[in-house]
Every structure is written in C-alpha cells, then in structure tokens.
Image (cartoon, rainbow, N blue to C red; front, side, top):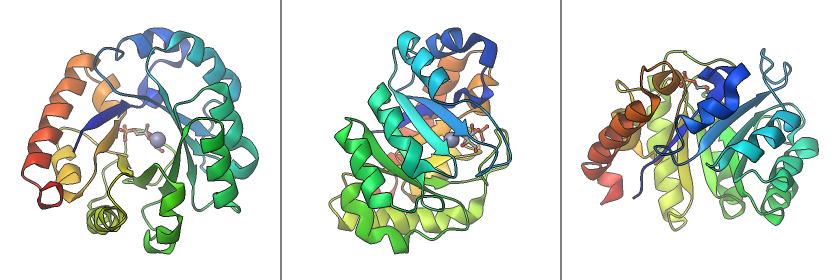
Length: 227
Ligand code: DX5
Ligand code: ZN
C-alpha cells in the first residue's frame, strides 16, 4: 500500500502561495487546498479564482477539499479547471452521485468527505462512484486543531469496507495529523495523509514531509489491514 502525503496550504502564507507550493513540490504527492465558504464551516479561505491561479504555478496536482454548502453547484468547476482531485462533503451534497460523476467526467479523482460525527456505512453503496474517502479527524474549519482519536474505530471500519470493494479507493485523513498521530492513522487504515501545521509550521517543510512519510510507511508495514 502506497503512503501519500498531501500538505495543506491552509497553514501556509496565503500571500506567497506559489512559493509555499514550491517548498513542498519535491517532497509531497499532492497539494491540499481547503476551500471554505463561511457557511458550511465558520471560516472563509479561497475559491475557484485562487485555485486557477495556483494551477498555473504549482507542479504538484491539487487536492481540493470543498467545505462549502453547495458542492453540487460548484464542485465540477474545480475539476474542469484542472484539479487532480475534488472532494465534496457528504453532509452538504444533495445529489452526490451526479456531482461525483461530473467530477470524474471532467477528469479529476472524485472524493467524498465525512465529518467526525458522520458514519461511513450509509455511503457504502456510493463506493463505486469514489476514488477517495476522506475521514475528517477534526471538525472542519481550522488548521492546528487537536486530532480526534474517536475517529480511529471508524477509520478501521472504513478500511474494511473499502477492502471488501476491492481496495482501490484511497482513504484520506485530515486534521491534527502530525508526528504524534500519523502512525495511529496508518495502523487504522489511512493511506493518504493531509498535514497542515505539521508541515508548514516546521522549519523545513520538505523534511517534515519526508519524516511523516517514513513514520506512516513503518506503521503501514506492521498494520494488519495492509497484509
Ligand atoms: C481543516 C482542514 C485541514 C487543515 C488541517 O478543516 O480541512 O485540511 O488544513 O490542518 P492541520 O493539519 O493543522 O490540522
Ligand atoms: Zn482539508
């Protein structure tokens, strides 16, 4: 199972996004872009114009995480703009099948995110429509929050669910992922790790990514689910 690291630019300097993207380009697999609309979450970040600008400068594929109330209306445009992956929230989508299909039709990977208090089991029938399932390990809205251990049993159940469908769907964790918590996530079944403050808060972001990747690889090697 391949470990992937997706640093979140939410913890980067928004006035220097191209430089901040370049700082992780050689070390990361994706660049995680948190789109927040002040309605789905109590915070406002950036939207399609900034993503379009970033696409011109970033060499890494963009992993767009849409924390917005109207993903059905807005998500396909991120895929059409050239994002490599577009993730919508289950709590917000009213027509998830249509929206996930539109994301894929525009050439991006389609992701579905669930908040810490949202169960994954009701979405099992949607798995064929998905390339990635994102389990939030904090309540969405802000970087630098404490990791919620209560999500770990759900992560194990999600891994079993994904395995029973062939195992091709990536399982992403986002929120409070750090040197202290990443091994627990990998052991429970995650294979794509978002890290904001643990990467951009470090003196050397690229080196922090490499250290996180090695920790996750070691934890995956001893995990039952990856055998
Ligand atoms: C939170 C965002 C995260 C955030 C993670 O709502 O979705 O991507 O940037 O930041 P850290 O890693 O600092 O918890
Ligand atoms: Zn995110």
